[in-house]
Structure formats: C-alpha cells, structure tokens
Length: 142
Image (cartoon, rainbow, N blue to C red):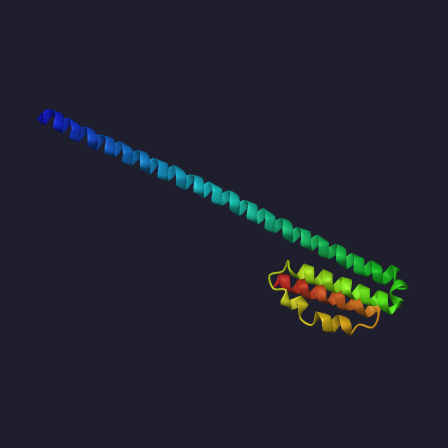
C-alpha cells in the first residue's frame, strides 16, 4: 500500500509538472500569436494611414490644379454673381472635407467663411483658396 501511495503521489507530481509545462508552453505560444497579430494590425494601420495621407495629398494637388485651370481658362463663366457664389460654396465644401484629413483642421478653417465672403471676383477667390491651401501645407509641415 505504501508503494502504491508513493507511486500515486510521484505520478501525480509528474503529471502536475507535465501539465504546468504544457500550460506554460500554451501561454508562450498564445503570447507569440498575440504579438504577431499586433504587428499585423500595426502594419495595416500604418498602410491605411499612409494610403489616406497619399490620397489627400494627391487630391489637394488635383484641387490646386483645378483652381488654377478655372482661373486661367474659365474666368468668363464666373463673371455671373450666382456662378461665383456656387464656386465659393464648392471650394468651401472641398476645404472642409480636406481639413478632416489634417491633425489640426483649425489652421485652414479659421476665418474660411469670412475670407470667401470677402472675395468679389474669381481671381480674388482663387487667390484666397490657394492661400488657404498653402496654410494647410505649412501646418502639416510644422
């Protein structure tokens, strides 16, 4: 009976050690998987952020080209007060949407409405919009 009890206690200790070792291995493996998943998530987040920044940068460049082309090639269309007002509304909305891609949109939104309302011509509006976009560029660089 003593031999069986010693065998059982020894066997239980051995099984307990094996189970604890298996548990530690499982925890280590799980932590490794968590670390890998965090790396994948970080890479995806970085890729998404990079994509968004590149998209908004190219969108800004295209918008600047649009403003330039409008000013150079279509000034006659915007001699009409209603058309100029519509152009101002469009540029205002574009700037608001663009500002949402910035960490601090207040730099380009501050005084936006007042600035555009003060523009009496297409040339004034285009110059004001380009100045606002330049401010956005300076804000992102600082």
